[in-house]
Amino acid sequence: MRSYLFAFAIVLFLSGCANPRYQTVYRYEAPTDASARACLQTCEPKLAACQTSCQHRYQSCLKEIEPLVDTRHNEALKRYENELDRYRLELQHYQLQLSLGWGYHSMWYDPWPYYYPWPEPYYAPPNPPHKPTRDEAFNRVRKERCESDCGCQPIYDACFLSCGGKMFPEVKCIANCPKDK
Image (cartoon, rainbow, N blue to C red; front, side):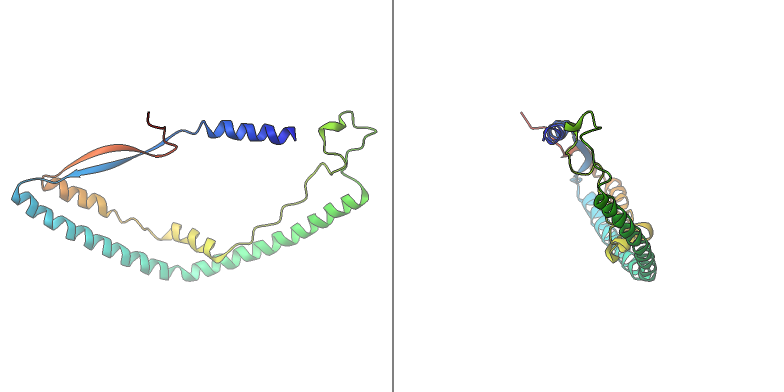
């Protein structure tokens, strides 16, 4: 019971020590003169065309990786079967040890019996393996092969600045933010 309270106290203490995370965002200020506004009208179609092209490339990439996803998922299922066989053997060994009474702390030779939850075993049963899903394999391959960010925002920013617009960086807290006073 003491160890649980101690662990809980440590978790509470460490959760209070989390550092805030910040992110830089940009505030856009459009130019005021008419020629600059006309120039800005060309920037948004460029951004939309870039994003559309990027989306088409991304969707075609997702279609192309399907065979690789199936292959990786099948390999992961084979590894899972091997791990499951090993887990079954380890579990049988663990149950045999328990049935024979081995792995327990004995009161007659243990000088500090109150540290252990006697008569429970002092080692834990084996952990079962995690069964892989096709979604996990798909997400892994998608991150490896398909680029979702095509760099359209820097193109828009360059166009915006060339037309006379201004960008102002602002740092904002996004996680573990301190409370405002």
